[in-house]
Length: 243
Length: 243
DNA sequence: TTATAGTTCTTGTATAGACAAGTGTCAACA
DNA sequence: TGTTGACACTTGTCTATACAAGAACTATAA
Image (cartoon, rainbow over all chains, first blue to last red; front, top):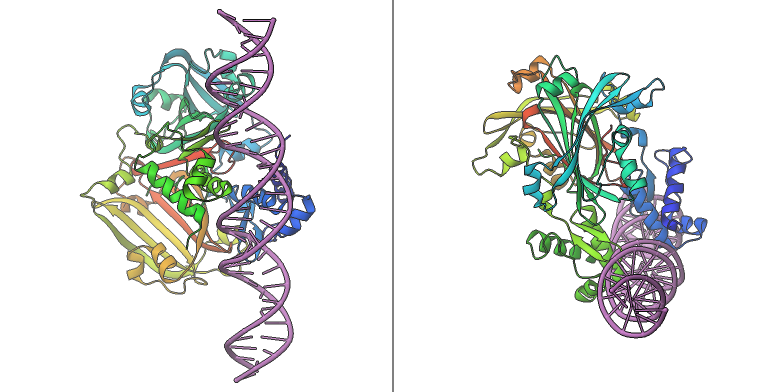
């Protein structure tokens, strides 16, 4: 049984997504919601905090909780088709091509940086295509300590689903950096880059619920197919653009 | 007087930053902290949630709150100097050159997208340099409704400081998209780009505490000087990479 | 007409208490 | 020896209550 406040948050989220509450509307007041769902006000407040974090509402002291236009978040960008937009097209056809799969060690810079003691890892390199267009080259280092063996079949489908559903690993948080760098000849060939040699590089360190390091990923994106969307409250000092 | 839970959060944050608690350590248990600070356990829990959101700790049910290595977050990247790293160098010398400052309208795509009724805005275009190297071209559209007049002097220093400290505007949240796009001839010239015509474009829509739209910014970065760092919990569906 | 003050909404903060559920220890038992 | 079960810790959820503080409206007074 999920917690009450999460159920209520899910319910309110649905009502916003299905436009029972639309942008600019005020949600019922906390005491009103409290009576509606038959829970205490603190429980309602926990639910509303979930919506706040998700960027669905904005709370204004003395007034109430306003629904924010979700459509505002991903606003249109001049003549650029994002991966997500491609994804939503019906004729989309996503495929994965395994470039390499081997046993190795986590790269030295990461070992040093995290002071790792267990360094044995599985390396997977994969090319992702949409409608036969190459979009991303993903390189993963997955610690053998947590995932002893990865088959080609598993690498072909979703690794995360395998980790979470089959192995019961609880992935909890990740740190990412996004930069733009020159690509290697090989990656340029894989991504069929001709006009430029630059790719968008997303490096991720992924951790489990018990804070142990688990996976290092390097994603190299075609620059013309890359789009990153971020929603951030002012106070949050993380997730920040370094400028 | 700031809220207790924020003071306690600030205190714990300091203790982590000053390494009184280091990575891997468990914080005192919630009842222990509750006694230490002479507040209720719920108040302590609010404080710990702040640290959790900031990515400073990880809570493990049945065990406790573990300190996460903050240094892990911004990990080193091959031969790339970020703006932030440059910033921290002592010999850094940041300057701003105003390219244009005029009254105009918010771009049509934004007006349509947000269904704006008030569209009068001040337009500011600025070139940012570090050690005389051009780094970013910033273009801002700021609604006249909230900021009637912007002088060249104000545009020269921090606009945000002017908005928040002098005008008392409360900036609350923003949505950003990051893409890579070809630059105009003019921007290429300003950024002194020769090897490539690509720039990293960060578009931001900024909102006030009362959810009213306030500012639209287009930042065009030299690709070799751009770096974005992100920390995200798994459950959070926002701040996500679209892929 | 224009302020002012009060009233009644709203959300924000803080407390004390209760029980559920995950984790680890250790003693008793087979 | 090895397993089980009780126990004592931890964090997670939920309640009921109280007061503070911001916002909006209204009636009153100047």
